[in-house]
Image 1 (cartoon, helix red, strand yellow):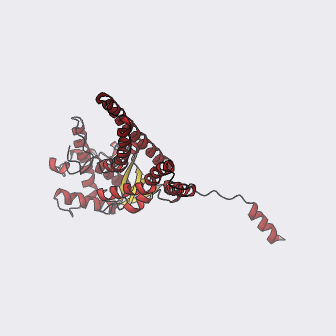
Image 2 (spheres, one colour):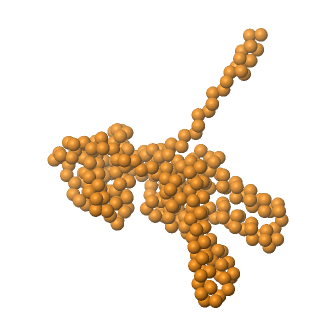
Image 3 (cartoon, one colour):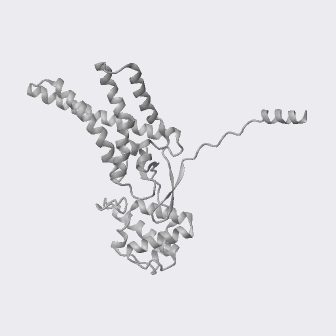
Length: 302
């Protein structure tokens, strides 16, 4: 009796809800530094895709109106021209729109930027054009190819209903694929080795500016040394200083000293990083007053 009562009590005991899956991930850079990132949610990524598709549609409508005006002015039939504009325009947009924007310095399309998202390499290195091309060519197989094939096939009567349903199921499978894996990756992300992460811009911590680092004579940095890095690396350096991990500080200080042409084993890593952080921040803020914004170490325009 006691055993059965215990079983009933266990069965009646309310189950604890499972904690939601965290979207926080650790990104290890080639220098061995661990950076904390947050993956973009499925809703944010869906919103970014919808915004990008609306922008593409607006571009096509703009070209359509332009072609109609030119055709009427020249007395040409608009029907064949509009067919060419929509077929060729949609093909070019869906294949080069995403690649062109994600291969840029911000690694994000306008839709992703509005949703505060960007694409990064999962290995912590720089996002390569090859990875951008691979992840976006996969979108053609995942989504655009079946969805663009269906309307024309049904209009011509060349496929049966079950083939159409199969193609639609194929598109839905890949469309919702990111909701069924913990890293919120599309098939294109799996192939290219990328993540889509949040790109929130935080204010640089003023409390990290040590007056001694600003006024001391131990560390002085030449202009070319301060030009080696940009705002992106400044934020990452801030994260390292906040974490206060001695191994991370050693690795980052060694990397920066090597890039600046200094002795990598000089020591006093925390003091060096604080001094470089303070000097780099003031240099970037000074340039910003003159409209010069250096986004990262690869940005040569500033």
